[in-house]
Length: 551
Ligand SMILES: Nc1ncnc2c1ncn2[C@@H]1O[C@H](COP(=O)(O)OP(=O)(O)O)[C@@H](O)[C@H]1O
Ligand SMILES: O=C(CO)[C@@H](O)[C@@H](O)COP(=O)(O)O
Image 1 (cartoon, rainbow, N blue to C red):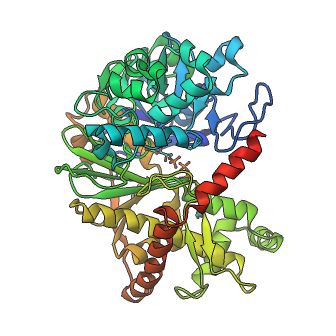
Image 2 (tube, rainbow, N blue to C red):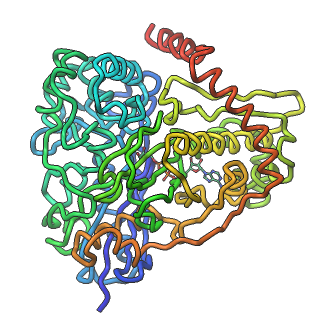
Image 3 (cartoon, helix red, strand yellow):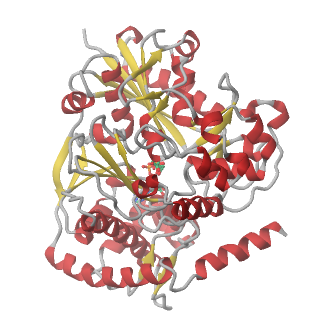
């Protein structure tokens, strides 16, 4: 009889469960559950209190609902008997940390803290810890901290240390009440398997764990004397390798999910990195771009290099035994979504409704009718800040070239192109640092937009492979679950058997590539002008905005 594994992908707005067959990796059932509270950006649901700009919170109970609703629904859709399931694996957005008590209870679930924003989960795109990140970077550079180069020279406001320092300095009482500062990726594994294990991926990329150690006490004290114990008191804990068994499914989690108690629960993972298994990119040299709300660029390598502005290089950060590289763009689908929601006029909505089209498809169709450069626009893709290679979330979006003749599809196209230019900047930075990048493998929800994919092929001059599964992360988690359950000796073997890629789906067109080279040169000029300090207008605007909101 066949065996099956469950993969659960915790995204920004929803959690998706898949049931995958061990052996051929076929997805035989799936279900999605939208988080009840979604992303909390404006008001705290408990009190209705307004949140400052650049906040993004979540509610941990929403994650448990995915186990209670999506997992049984996926199992029911598959028709697979629960007794055939041998393991469950999960992946999460990151860095998405939360304060919990020693038994794992989130502080926001304690009545006395329910009205305190800092008691909640800080989602990856909670970007208000930028001033803390700036200090983390300045003090590290001044002291010559050896780990800084492993993060391209800059630690991001999206990560555990910046968010932890913000917690300490803005709500010391919640900081003091925090026994463990834990990634949601590890918290959900704790809920499933009953064991507190920090996964090697988030520990490395998001919590500055290098060569087996976190930043030392002296450094932390230099940031703030009260922060000296952050690692020892709030982060310390056992580390689990990706694909290892973290524990057995607890009776409580078995009741939630309908799965057999005791089956393997895999060590946590990150939504981007876990997809490398589905993309069969577990060996050196193949870059996977996981393109959705944001984009992560993930690549294994056997060389250790310092790539300026990468998110990080971590030993075993994607697959045990190799250096895993990560870079990324904080806003991609989010930028397109923003324009569709706030920039598309009523006429576009009406046409899309009349033709039964999604607005993205309508604007893509209209934009595809133009030759490269016809709209006369260049945009910077920084509406959610810049994750790589500038690592600065006080940067913001720009569109140059608007005239009275500019139409919505022109702007939409310029925004699509801006994100492709951002990816090209990242690839070129890797190559300049001595890390060769081959063809790209595209995973994530945006792979469905063929026009966007062709722009990426033309802008980067690279052939694009596309994941066979539309659920690269969830299937990646299922592959890791199969390894944790002992079906394969390691993640390479699991990926070889259960992953799958369609080769050379998009190829660059030489004429369009040449036309884009000219536009890319303009992008680089604007990128450096606004992003490397020639004109700090974006920082000044953020400061004014903060002042106004604080008054
Ligand atoms: N056809 C499309 N073309 C371009 N962007 C799209 C399209 N459909 C949805 N999007 C954008 O894709 C993002 C969702 O991507 P998805 O991979 O499903 O989610 P996530 O990154 O949260 O896992 C949203 O930001 C949305 O605005
Ligand atoms: O930053 C990472 C991983 O390091 C992602 O979790 C984050 O960009 C969120 O990804 P999604 O866009 O929700 O797929």
